[in-house]
Image (cartoon, rainbow over all chains, first blue to last red; front, side):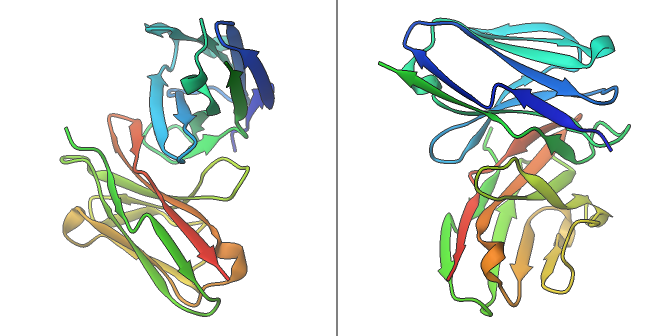
Length: 111
Length: 111
């Protein structure tokens, strides 16, 4: 089945810095999601981005499906950005199938 | 629009006891998922429902876990008897057109 790998596993930033998180996947996908898991454990949807680029405020994401990777950009980071960032892709051709998650990138933003 | 609701938020039980979790998906979402998230890992699917039918339960430990989704709306997940290794966060999700939305989760501690 599909494998999802994220890098880096950990990241420490000073408030105001920019960062790029990477997600590699082993097979072609028709769906890719980025989530932020806050310190209370809630998984918050950031992007649903099977291909192309999307932006939402200080966050943007790009998926290059042909090269099997996705990038999440965080600009002007804030302490509230701390937490774990997950990317996930469906296990098979059905875009509504179970999501396979990467191991996550744990981000800590220092004031 | 209300999000995915779960209860209880926290539960502590002793091994060999039973426990049940409840999930109410986003209104109109036909697909419902239960994931298990062990500390330090990404969520992994336990079971997926389409309306009130099971789509995927290949990773559900059927000797101790059971789930149902009567009437195609709410769902319950039960563990009987619990083991120490069942300590985890149990996440319910529902989806619309492929994008999955997660509830706040139930943090289970088995002592």
